[in-house]
Structures are given as structure tokens and as C-alpha cells.
Image (cartoon, rainbow, N blue to C red; front, top):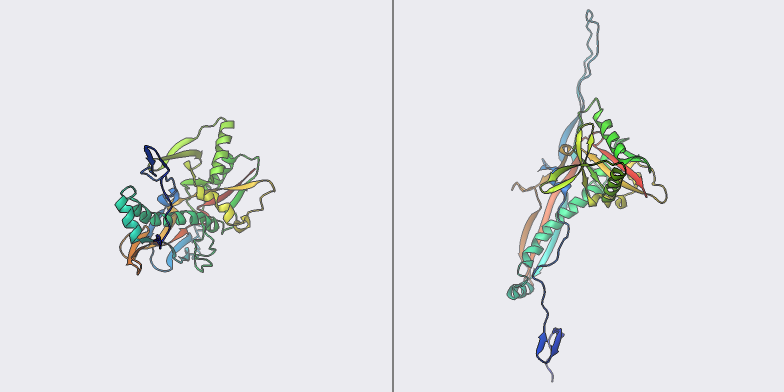
Length: 336
């Protein structure tokens, strides 16, 4: 009777010959350029939620003054207008199970001893990536009465108000169109609006570069987070960075343009998004349980029956775009 391995193992040698035995060897570093962060999430505020839902008040008007006869003063009583806002907190999670045996073998081999820590760290990174994508592609439609477990995307929140989403037609100047929208926002006599950035689809960024080259224009450069510099344009409220966000490029496939109050894109063309934002008016309201950690948290749940280590990453937060109808603007650029 012939003894067999419980799981057949095939020969692993690359070559066997006279004076030579070639075996598998690998580079000690795993090639990895996976996206793990987001400029948008690094630039907007994260703050503790005040409950579930998170609540705040928005003042939309002050008392109205009127002219009167100086010898017959007749004031009319008025007062401020305030609106109660609320947003339900959402949850993003991921989990990994590590086999004790496989981890022990990997450690004993020594070559990839770091991979356990890398895989545990990456379940936290995956939560960040999911959040970074959902700020533009989230499918929920109401902050107060959720229809899905995802965020209400920034595009959906901004386009809630009439005229908060506009289109730049094919052939029209993208640079002039963006500057005109910023000027229109700055001309608001009711609110003090000072946008701080323009987030753009990467392909739209290429169209902007081509237009600047054809017009012999030179973009300024601005550092938006440590070590990251981007193009910037001069507007009526100062120089605004053009921040390329690949997750914004995915937004046009996540929802139809009708959801943003925009007309259908002509056949043979695409609609690329640019979002003019006032970042101080955007926040991520976080439930952290009292430990003060506003980032994803990692929990080790101990060994399971099969001696598997279980790790769970969790983030309780929500995206809130304050002043959605006037402090921000969604722009769709029509191009081939």
C-alpha cells in the first residue's frame, strides 16, 4: 500500500539536471501600488457626531431691515430664519481571518514575515477607499430617511437645490466656464461664499491641460496636502486648486445625470464632472465611542474554533455637505 499526502503536492523545482537544481525564489517586496488614500478625505473636517442622527441648525436669512420716514419711524418686526438639519450615521466595515498555521509557516520562512501586518492594515485602508469612493458615488438619496446603507453623495446633496448643477457645452471654454461659476457664487449677496477647491475628473483634467496649451496659458501650482501639488486657476475669489480625484471619474457611471437635474448627454459625448466646493462647509460626522479616534478602528476578536485570528475594521460616519444649495456647485463638461 502506497502512502499519499493528504493534499497532493506537485514538484516545485524549476529545473533538475546534472550539476544544477533550480528552485523557486521571489523578490522580498510585493509589488503594490494600490490606492489607499484620498485627497478629499484629507482636506475636509472630521468631527464627532452629536448623536444618531447627527443634528445641526442652518441659518438661511437674518432679520430684514427696511427704509422708513425719519420723522415717522414705523419698523416692521422680523427675525432670522433657521432650518433644522439632520443626518443618519452610516457604517463601513471589512474583515479578515488569518489561519494560525499559514501565518506560522510564513513567519518561519521569514521572506514575507511582514505580510500579516500588511494584510491587517489593509482592511483598515479598504474602509478608507470605500469612503473615498462613496463621497462621490454613494447611492443613498436622503440624509434623514436613508434608502440605502451608503452615503448620500456630494453630487446628490449639491444638486438638491435648483440651479446647483450646470453644464458647459461642447466647444465652450472649460476654464472660462469654471471661472464664471465661481464668480456667480461669489456674487451672492445673501451668503459669504468663498470656494476653496475644484475637484475634477482625471479625463477632464486632461481636457483642461489641452485647452491651456492651445491658449498659451500657464496654470499656477498649489500644494493641497503634504507633498502633492496640483494645477490651479485664477478666479474672482483667488487661486483655486484643480484637484484630480479618480473616484469622481467613477461617479458618472454610478448614477444617471437626471439624478443631478442635468440634461441627457448628446450621443457620442461624455459628461465629465467638476465640483466647486467650500471645504470648510463639508464635514464627516464620526461616532467613535468616546476614544477620540475619528478614523477607522480595528478590532481583534480573538481566535475562532479553527484557530483563525479574526480582525474587523469599522467606521461609523456620514458625509454632510452644509450649504449644499449655495456654497458649492456641480459642473458637467460635455466632451467627446
